[in-house]
Image (cartoon, rainbow, N blue to C red; front, side, top):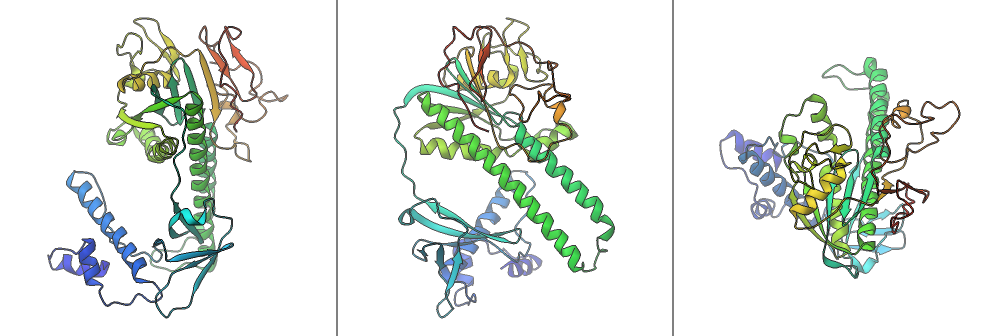
Length: 431
């Protein structure tokens, strides 16, 4: 189909992109061992990608049409074209072709009768099965009128405000994983630069093994970051359910990459997996029976939630209003303004729960001692070890606001009025 559309484009004729037209073009064509339903699933993905690129191109956004040939593409198997036999799965093939069995590395986390489709995906030299299952919605005693605001971010993936209680999810471990992965990638590139084949030449077997190892490392890094996002979203939903929140107002970061914010900030925003963060939270809140409302987050971190006046863009994580004197955490201020835009009401946080997303890397980052300089969540590792540069009082770690309780992972409570504040739901022992 790609070759056919390329020829039609050269003849200045309309390309075939409609799903029905694609199916008519392939009527009577054999696909080897691939069944007809699987071939139609591939064509449907091609049609969706083509029209999505045309829609973005019409809106003035740079988008590429699906014109590159790929050796391996995801194949979807509908309900009834697969069956389970213990740790093996039989996938449907064309009539007369030998049976195709796939052995699973671990058990499927859903009952077999609830599975609706399977997608066979190839990545970094490995095969994966993407499972789509029908999961029953959980029933909780939630108050639809109780609203919480959620601010998505890079340093803190989720900042949540509900009433006078707050939740801060630190993403320092995710950023450490990204920095170490970038450092490893640069070192591998520098070491293999002299062995790279010239343009137009085929690489050696050693070069192909090097490229394969790089793809495996990239896939492993993506899996770790995605898993950390899912764990963070699960912790946020558990916190919302425990506080009886029935409606969540989330700041939509759509269009944040269309503005020029400088070379370094542009790179940070494009490496930020904001759509995956939002998708993880939306899926899990829907499963828990919590309604999600998206609002524009423009200016929420630079507006005072008390006097509702714009302030200069704060530097760092501290927010201070020069008009009314209100101070607080910048991300929590953004979450309060987001909740207000969705019709919710919040107050200055009297209890702040800290949690961490992801797992600290097994190797120690050489810039680890800089993490303790500005931090709203205690750093992983052993900062109090003798000889450590992070020992002692951390610069910039001021005392918390009066009346604020901070709960860390070991369950201890710190704050100026911790003995008089409510510490319900502050034990967040998640690494």
